Image 1 (tube, rainbow, N blue to C red):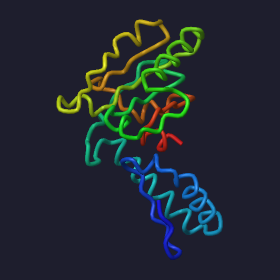
Image 2: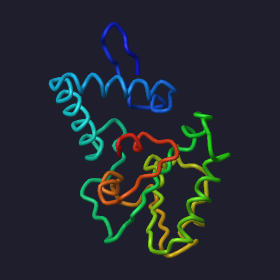
Image 3: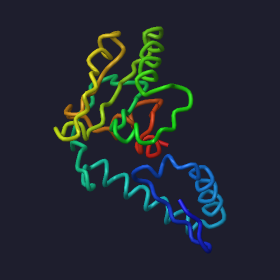
Length: 180
C-alpha cells in the first residue's frame, strides 16, 4: 500500500499483505472511508466484487470449486495453509520457528479440546502437480476425531469454509485478510 499525493493505492495480492506498512495503510484507508461515505461505498463494492470473483473460481487462478457442499459441522476453526514457497519467502516468523511448529501447536491445542472442530485447508494450488509441496499432512487428521484436513483436491470451496466457521487462523495467507 502506498499513499501518494492524496491517492491511496492498495495491493491485496501476493506478498503485499505481509509488508510492514500494511497496518498504517489500513488505518489510512479506514480514516479516508470514515470521512467519505462515497469512498467507503466504492471500496466496499470493489472488495465485495473481488471476493465474489475469487469465491466463484473466476479469478486468474481458478482454484475454487463451484457448487461444493460442506459436510455438516465442517469446522469451528479453519486454518488456511499457504503455498509453502510463499510462506518461506516471507521470513517473518514471530512466535513460531516455522509453519510446522505452528501447525503442531494448533493440533496439540485441538487435541486438548475435543468439542472444537478444527479444519486445516491445504492451499488449493497444491492440486496442480507443479505446485504440490513435499509436505506430509496425513498426520494432522490422525491426531484426533475433531481435527480435519481438507486436501487441495477436495471439492470444497475455501470461501464456503470461511462463511461457516467462527475463527480463521492463517499463518500467512491472502485468505486471512479476505476473511477479516
